[in-house]
Image 1: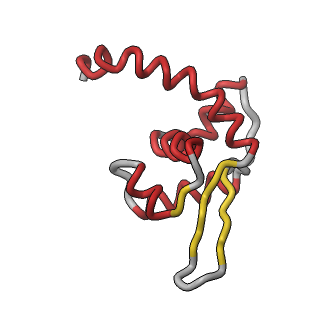
Image 2 (image 1 turned 120 degrees about the vertical axis):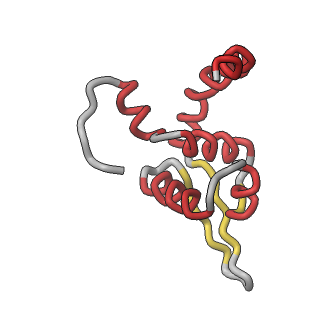
Length: 109
């Protein structure tokens, strides 16, 4: 994450989210810890490159924990930190709003 000052809390939150994929990654990791391949299959439409990039950014920002299990083949599991879980709690009402208005929003497209 880049170092900067924010004008308000919403500015800070949007900076952390940065696009469509990070919110979806956080959402699915909020359900349960996932391996990379499981996460890639779960986050429909994301490329491997984009998933790697966003996971690195979320880990650097302290939202996601990456745990490497020493075995063959290597097993890497991603989970939310307490900080990441606090963001998912904040995003939950936004997701509920989206569910409630999904049909209307899809009709606009």
